Each structure stands twice: as C-alpha cells, then as structure tokens.
Length: 252
Image (cartoon, rainbow, N blue to C red; front, side, top):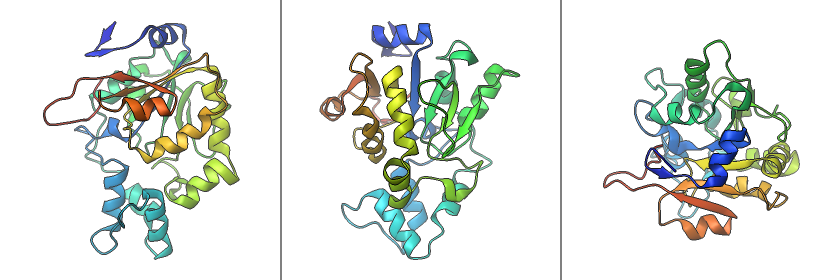
C-alpha cells in the first residue's frame, strides 16, 4: 500500500490499524516551511557562530558540551531559536498526526524541541488532545499514549533539554531514564522512525534501546534509497521514499 508516495510494508499498516504503532519523529520533520527549523547539525552551528566553530570530526553533542564549558548559554539559545513566532507546523506534522485514528492509540515520540506536534494534535483532536510528556518525566514505555518530548521542549526549563554530551550521558547512561523508556517501547510496539538520516547522531543514542527489544517486533525508518546499510546495521528496516532533485527532506 502507498501513502503519499511511500510504500509502507504490511507490519506497519497492521500496527497502525491495531493501535500498536509508535512513531519517532526527528528534526527532518520540522525543516520544511512554514516550520523552517534547522537540523541538529545546523542548530549547533548557529549557537557556536563564527567565533566557536566545530572541530573536524567533532561529535555534535561534544561540540555543544565544549561551548557550555566556554561559557556559551547553549540551552537558552536553542530554546530561543526553536521558539520563533513565525514558525508553524508544516505538512509533515499534519500527515504524521493523521496516521493515528484517534487519541487513544496516539503514540508519538519526538527528539525535537519545538511544540509543533502538540499544536498539530490540538488542531486535529480539538478537545481530546493526547497527553504530553516532557523529559525527564517520561511515562512507562510499554503502556503510554500521547506525545513524548524525549529530549525536552521549549515549553519547559532550558536546562532540561538534552543537547550536550553530559546531557546525553545522564539521559542514556548514568540516570538512564531515556534508555529505560526506549527498551520498553521497542519491546512492546512496532516502531517507525521519520525525519532521521543514516548519519544522524541521535540514532546512535536511540539504538541503545534496541538491544533488549523483541525480535518479533520490527523497527522501520522512512529513508532515501541509499541508506540501507546503515539502517540494517542498527536492526532497522528502511522504507524508501523518492528523492527530489533539490531536497532530501522526508515528506509524508
């Protein structure tokens, strides 16, 4: 079956029909106008500016951690950039919210910090808006419904945003609340990733939760046709979308 030029395999469609689908949304979803927000790499570059450039091969989270150590207010600046009053939900946000038949089976996890999914869900469901969760206060991954802002949100305190290597270390290792949530999600639901690339640093962290996942429940990613090896190495099945001549943005 094709939905907006994407052939979704039967396990994804069955999970959608039965309410057992969890959708993970990354920065690629918020790039298209009228959202017009940067991906994680460009976001970091904006914060560092010309005076504090990223070193060659420096991981983005390490780079942002170095900026914090140099006195740059990383979390506050990210909140300001991603709170632009001119930015609005785009067609991707609307299409993703429409994948869920009602709020009772609405299961969306986003590593973005903007509020566009909450706005899009509010527009669709009116008075029956799905519950919204903000890191680090995440729900039980095997039982949740609603919108999970897994790395924080512009609607909460900036210091709670997961941006630097120290932030990721707490979320996925020392405190481990993100890993615990992911392990349960991946063990109980079919998962579809949208808006991530094969190079996305965030995927290396999200993949930490795959180790204990049920092999019977598959994970999928909407991706261009040249990313297959990277996805399969993560245990994720790529679902191809057609590439346009001028953009690689994921559009549902």
